[in-house]
Figure 1 (cartoon, one colour):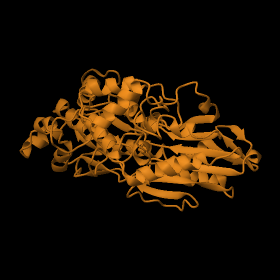
Figure 2 (spheres, one colour; figure 1 turned 60 degrees about the vertical axis):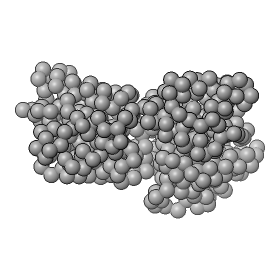
Figure 3 (cartoon, helix red, strand yellow; figure 1 turned 90 degrees about the horizontal axis):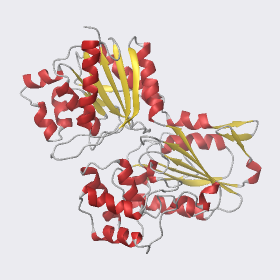
Figure 4 (tube, one colour; figure 1 turned 180 degrees about the horizontal axis):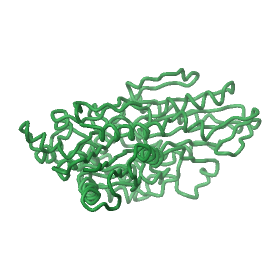
Length: 451
């Protein structure tokens, strides 16, 4: 997958090296390759994570794929299952270029990041497929980032519009993915383990993680995973974040906390005895591959973390401090050096501008790094989409701040207005990939060369 720098002419060899690192990170989380790594056939036998699955026990195979990587994951699994009788559903974001036939699976192009009627229909069809499973059925759930939007079925008393409003309010308040999904699961008839609860047939879930820490109950809001969170916790999140949500949402959560609605299936629930949740790939795979590429290009490299969270501009402050220590003191590495991190930051939106967490991270870094020679910093969303923009992320150098001033722009004003996309559109440095058909969170690379 190519990463293109827009308006990046003359940015130099260091930018090219960082872009090569990002491209290698993306290649490492190719969904088809990850499925084939964990599911294999040998001599007519099926092996999942090295353990044999006795195909003679089954005569009905169900494939339910949902998320940004659903199409390539389903394509890989269909080619492995070959002539076996398969039925099921695939739900991908509207506009996805599905390159291979997924027949006999039913394909839905659903709303993302905002769910729509197709999202509801896909969730309903998936529940119907597992409800129709019998003693000789085996189900595969292929889950990746975007699942929460692409298969969305509101619980009793809640509308799709209620859920959309709640999600938007929490995102603008800077809620973490864990907080967001805690609330989502308690407003859903699909997430939070309910898919697993609807059947007694074995389910093998192959999960591509876009969540820091790879918690299966958080990825895609955990349709096949036990949910340790509660209605009371969901209420506490809304109160602490002081967000405006509909009366339907408050009523559902308050009644649930009072025991008037059943809790989501919890750890220890018998329904999970027949479920195997397997994380086939995640952010660390991308970070590790990017770091290896930076080493191959001659940079002393450290993989700092794959669990970066918190406000984007605060993460930028921390990483910029590391860049200064490398440049001026040679710690923790002497130049030429690269620091690779992964994870997913958040942005508390206070302005009216356009951007995403990666672009905001890089804009903030351009301010902290101003005047520092031979430094490059880039951050990229592995799904190719950073916020409601056409960019995947951005790249800056120690000269970006000065370049902005020279054309009459004040970086601090753009940051205050959460307008990172407009800033990099004018200054140059937007990173674009188009849809990548994968999603494991974000990758960022900090590169400091010799003076």
